[in-house]
Image (cartoon, rainbow, N blue to C red; front, top):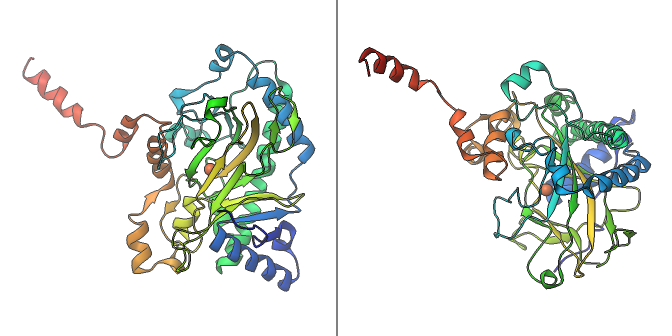
Length: 369
Ligand SMILES: [Fe+2]
């Protein structure tokens, strides 16, 4: 069963850039422990405007309340749903148990991508799209997205400190990345779905560098904000396996007041050769029908041109074998979006040489066929 969460470190974001070396070292030690063992830390003094977050949830719920035909106008399968609305039952966890997908989402990016990157990766670096007549949705969402990205960048400075890397190693590598912020609405369970194996989000690891979770809101069956309807509902993480706990421990996330959450994604695990481990996590649904939840998750990515491979200090025989061969982040993301069902399987055909048919056509013409 789940364990206490009081052991998860709380990092003051300001400590990372404190002029006092002992304060910086304290933050570094907390990040090492949090990201190294739990794959997760709590952050205080984060600078995210929580009043704006609440206003954003009001605006997002208004968007979600529209008829599906309206929301479909903002759905973008052609860019693998990387912007705008994703309907329920679109995405699947890689280690999926085959249950329905219980969320509808809206994706935005905090930064206007460069034209060069838009041409090279039209899906990963797509421009934002916005619903008509919803200025508050746009204003709150883009500002939140930028604030969350700032937290991620700052935290990467702290992670470099924690890992003994040059201060800007990781912060510089996220600059210009295909970051996405995702607003989620977990849809209510029906009476016959309650107390089954159905969860709101199946256990998975995030494929980006680091994920920032500013906290969500539960809604009762009438759509009114409410307290958590079931103490066991919500986010659980799995700690790093040890000799004592070879499958890790399942721990319920209980964010201290005023804090937000940061968790390790696959890209950070790969760069560190497993020193920081991508956090397996699951979102348990409440044991009551009709309750829903809105939340935001910000996914900071490395720049698409960065290499995904253990950094020099973390290259061992085992990590080189376990995390090789070296790939570009843009290629890695493409492959993963196929794995989770957002991109079509034939997107993989873009990798490697794609002009073999040119010679075939010329030879057909030669033969007068
Ligand atoms: Fe996740």
